[in-house]
Length: 211
Image (cartoon, rainbow, N blue to C red; front, side):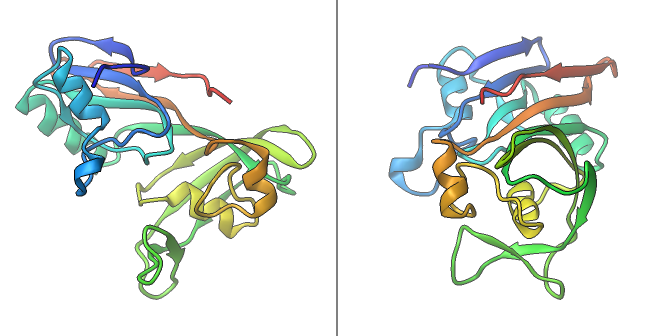
C-alpha cells in the first residue's frame, strides 16, 4: 500500500514523526483483512527499519513517533513507559462542560462481554488520569484539549463519556446526537514532546486538528 495521506512531519537517522490519518491501524490486526496499517506502509515505502513505539486508535488521527534503530526504539519506549513524554489531544465533545477545566481519575478495563469497548470499574480497573480544558464553546458541543497522564486504551473516550460529554462521531461511545454531528471520531493527537533518543535534545511537535 502507498503512504497515501500519511504526512512525514520530521525525520532523522534515529526517528520518524508522522501524522496518522483516521481509519488506519497503527499496527497490523490479527485478521488477514487487517494487515494494512501505519507501520507496514512506512516499512514498504522507504522506511523498512521503522519500529512502532506507541499507538493511536484506528479512528484517532495525529502525531506518532517511530524509531529507526534498536537503541532509539529502546530509549523512546522507556520515555513513554516512564511518562517523560508530553501529549495533548484536540477533541470535540457533546454539550458544554459547566467548568472550564478539570481532571478525571477513574480506573478502566475491558468490557468483557462487549469488546473492544472499555468501562469504568472502581474495583478491577487500572488507574487512569486525564486532564481536560475547554478551548471553545459552541452551544451543543465544545472544543476541548485533553491531556492523558496515563495511556490506557480508549482512556480519553471513556473518561469524557463518564462526565456526560462523549466525543463527537464516536461510534463506540457517543449517543445518537453526538454521533450524528460529525462523520468521524473527533479526536486528534495534536501535541507530542519527547527527548531525542541520541542527543537528548527536547523536541516538540504540533499538528492542528482536521475538524
